[in-house]
Amino acid sequence: MDHDIVNGKVSIPHSRPYMVYIRDPQTHSACGGFLVREDFVMTAAHCKKEHTMVYLGVNDTNNLPDGIEVDVFPHKGFVNQPGDDIMLLKLKTPATLNKTVNIIALPETNKEKISTNCMAMGWGWQEYNKESLSRVLREVNLTLLDSENCARPHTLCTKAEAGPARGDSGGPLICGNEAVGIVSSYITNDFTSYLTMYTKISHYLPWIHEIMNGFL
Image (cartoon, rainbow, N blue to C red; front, side):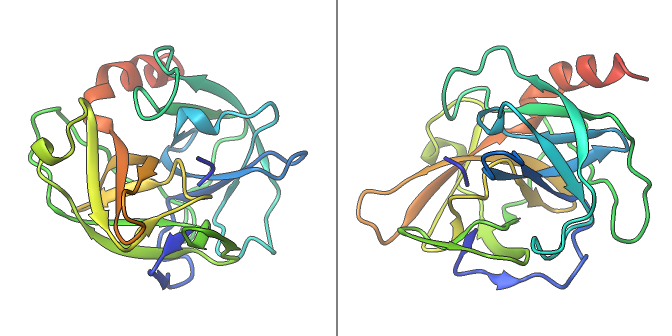
């Protein structure tokens, strides 16, 4: 899914300095992402487009800064959502970190206990079944499900009437002070609650380090 946040609230401008707006300037297809190092953005593999530009320090998408070109590194195991739906973007011009542009921490190990009090954010649709993109960043509080209620390996899940929608793909699931998941896909059986699936970042730490350490 090209994935705004449904039933969320408007974020305080620039309060989420790690958030990255990703867009194909030719098709205008957009995703979210997040800055994990001065020269790397993390997002979903299904957000890979022929032409990808990233925009840092964005609040209002009608007032975008200059875009930055990237080299793309989708996970080689990715075929379709949600499995292996993770991608790193290497910025050709590293970010200058400041109050409006900064990085978010990742888990340190795969065994790390994850807080169930979480948050997702993005510029996507504000209604699940109606095109309603948000110009400004929006966010929503979510509760992480137990792993047995997610039933997919290397995936985290939330289920609620609120959450990410189209245009929010690739954005982070923040639990505690870390990015623990990547918005991948959602399903519904009754159109009242939605099960959202997120790529579990800690499972991919060896792959992440392999890619990023190659550019130290």
